[in-house]
Structure formats: C-alpha cells, structure tokens
Image (cartoon, rainbow, N blue to C red; front, side, top):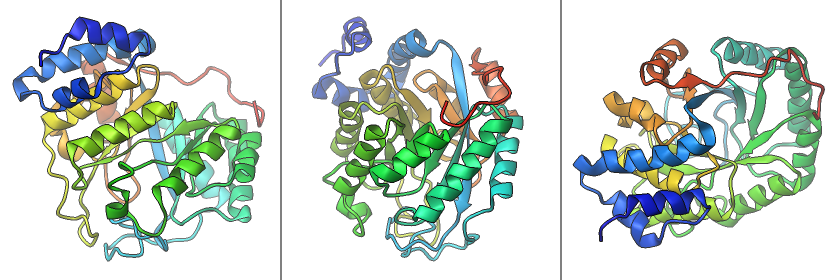
Length: 335
C-alpha cells in the first residue's frame, strides 16, 4: 500500500480518521521514511497549534502505598522498586511545587496521587490547593487521582481544576496483562464522569509494555472515539523491581511513528510526548515536536527527566516556541 500523504493530511484536517490500514502502514514504515510521516503530522499539528509547545510539570502528591497492581508502576502493590514513599503533601508543599512549575515556564501543573481513587478528604484538599494556586499564578491545573466519581469531578471543576488525567493505558484486549485490580471499563467510566462534570479530559496510554501494534492502534482509535482533549503518549521506562522491568522494546523511530499516528487521528487534541521520551527517543527527541505540541519537564513521578532549561534550548533550537501563560496574575476559582 502506498500512503497518499496529501490526501491523509486533508482528511485529518477535516476530522476524518486514518483507515486502520493506513495507520498500520505508518507504524510499519521503514525508518528512512519516517520524515514523510513527520512532515504529514506537522502539517496537521501546525494548523491547530502553530509552532507552540506547551510545557507541563508533574508533582507526585502522594507516593507509593498503592493497593493496585499496575505492572508498569514503581508505586504499585507488586513493585519492589526503591522509591520514596510518603502521604499526601500539604497545601504549602503543593503550592510550592506550582511556583517551581511557573518558574520553569510551565503552562500546566499536574498533581498526581498513588492509590485506587480519592477519598472525599483528598478531593477537598485538592480543591483548597487549586484555589490557592489560581489566586497566585496563571497555571492550568490538572489532577490525576485514580478512579473518580462524577460528584467528585464536579467539586474539582468548581474549585478551578481544568483537566483530569486518567489514562486508558493500553487496549481493552491487553489491559488484563497490565492490571487486574481494576478493569478497562473502570477507566472508561472515570473518563465519562470527567466529561459529565464539564472538565477537560487528559487520557492516553503507555506503549512498550509488550503489546502488539494492533493494541497500539486500538488505543489510538479509542482515544479518538472518546474525543480526548489532551493525549499523553508515554513510552515505558522499565523500572527495576516492577513486573515490566524487561519490556519497552522500542526504537526512536518507532516512537516517532507512534506519535504521528496519534496526531493524524487526533488533529485538534493536545498530543504530549510524555514519560520515557528521554529514554527511548534519545538524540532524536526534538523531532517529537513535529507531531506533539506538549512535553513534560523536570522529571516524572519516580523517574528523572529533561530539565526545563535544556528543554527550552531544544524547543528554540528547533524553531519552536514555548506557549506562554496568560498575562493575568490570578484567576478566581471556577473561572
């Protein structure tokens, strides 16, 4: 099959999906043809996001102590990884994290907790923290707190949270190989609750966990079907002590092809080159900016990442620009 790139670009811009066969062929392209896919993905990315790159910073708000058995996660019940473990951070600590994110030129600050789902006390805590952050800084606020009810999501929305991250993680078929303590449908239900509450969705997945290309495509088409607002594409960073520490058989070119498929299927969504990009993309990670319009800086939950200053140079060296925060110094809660 010969990929008709002009037609693919035009269909993507019209909101029409790739065919399954086209997406499969992109994933199977010889490495020397990856520039073709990058050029096509960039044509779509540039239409909706220009050359701006959104910087995001993660804050591990509660580490370890998780009853779930997600096999990729160093904080899970089946992990023996040597990580810091601590209870929910105080309001002061989380606000300090937001200040550091703002200094790093981040536009979005994402607070993440380990655990199956939040207690009502956890929700109240994040509401209070969010109100304080939005008084001080023009940051977009995202929380990732596990399985979430509609009522809890509505409280977060009222406090000024804009996004909730809850990844589908992988295909529905492969999910039982990744986690058995909650189901794929549990994750879908949380996304539905987030939407019902009027919050923006942040949901993608992790590749490199032993899944097939068909599973990657299932995930890419699933996030399109759910019309996710923000899609983090993570590349498994194998951590010693986790069941998946020997996985992630990815090459830099494969990672770029995966990002292109996600962009062409989701033209208006934020695509984030997320966890593991430094490990797997290595010297070519700057090319991820052609399909992706967002990255994390300053590390991940329990693993290090590219520092903000280095990321800024990479963005500028590629002719891109950092997406600026709003000029207003504060926002009332719920605005």
